[in-house]
Amino acid sequence: MADGAKGTREAVKGDLTGSCQCGAVTYRAKSAARGYACHCLDCQKQSSSAFGISIPMDATDLSVEGDIACFTKTADSGAQTDCYFCPRCGSRIYHEGKGRLGKVTIKGGTLDDTSAIELTGHVWTSRKQAWLDLDPDLPAWETQPASPEEWELLWGRKAQ
Ligand SMILES: [Zn+2]
Ligand SMILES: [Zn+2]
Image (tube, rainbow, N blue to C red; front, side, top):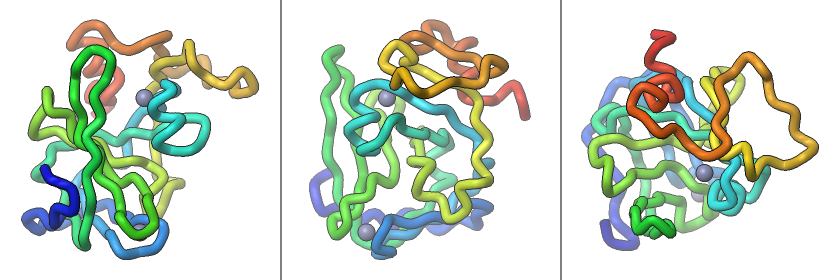
């Protein structure tokens, strides 16, 4: 989608609500607050912190209000991801991979109630900050899942 695109999706009744830092962009999502932490260098950049939190869901379960901008990131592998953010305050709101259309990941820190986040695992722990200790009971990958079964585990589907 082009820069400056209007991010308003078909309204859905949602369980989750969130916003950017300035409040110009808000969203509702019909989803559990279940997601994973990614410690890759891209997520450190996009979150401007130690790791990113991704809450995956179907795109049709997400309803965004307010003007939203898009930056398309191309990975070394050539895979492209549309990264949506508030053009006013810069908060990253959600991602949609061009290779996985119909699925989006909300950036967990934008939730109104971040205490609701249930973490399902960690990826790219090879890039993790050395001072961060992870829960040994959660699945973790040095890079990222290699099989559909591992992705299912990471996405927390088994827990539902
Ligand atoms: Zn904003
Ligand atoms: Zn990442």
